[in-house]
Amino acid sequence: MLSLATLSRRIAALLTLAFIIYLLIQEDQGTTGPEYVGSKIARPYATLETGTIRQFNAEGKTAVVLSMDEALYYEASDAVEMQAPRMLISNAEGQRITVQAERGHYHPTAQVLNLSKNVSVVQKDHDNPDVVIRTDTLMIDNRSRFISSDSAVTISRGAQHLQAMGMRASLDDRRVELLSQVKGRYELDAHE
Image (cartoon, rainbow, N blue to C red; front, side, top):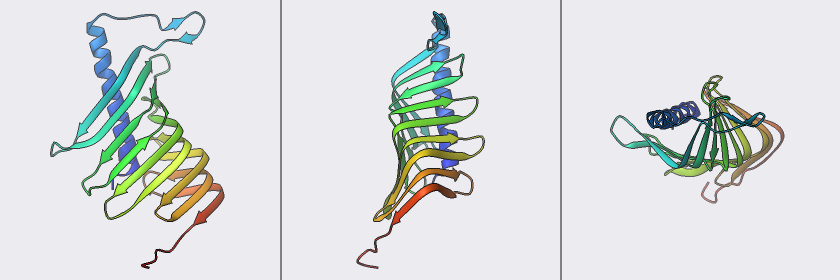
């Protein structure tokens, strides 16, 4: 299974690569503009509309597909705002992880990705039921190797369901801490 740490690093690398390429193209075309309009209203330095980025593994197969409806890069705050970010990750074991949200906010230097509005993480494994995490906000901090949410979180796998208010997880030891109001449901399969 592809770890969340690897996932976070790949997100950072793919977003940074896409914007570096875009910015280099813009520099060659000589487009520069004011960073602010009026008083403290930031304008994006670069935009990307309906973009898809693919990363390949050592065998040349697609390992990660990152797509978004729109991305805006703000140079002054070193931030990328994304509309409808979606990521599909495939690993050597045949598992597929899909991460999506309505909005994303990424700080390349800090290596922090904040996802918001209808965030879902789905791990597909052909031999087992999908693991699904749903929340309204999710923060991935690659430097501290930590993910968290202060929102309501639901984790499901087949007939098993956990609900909580808030979650913290370490990317390195894969431990998940549900913060409060934890409720769970476990249903035995008829074959067990």
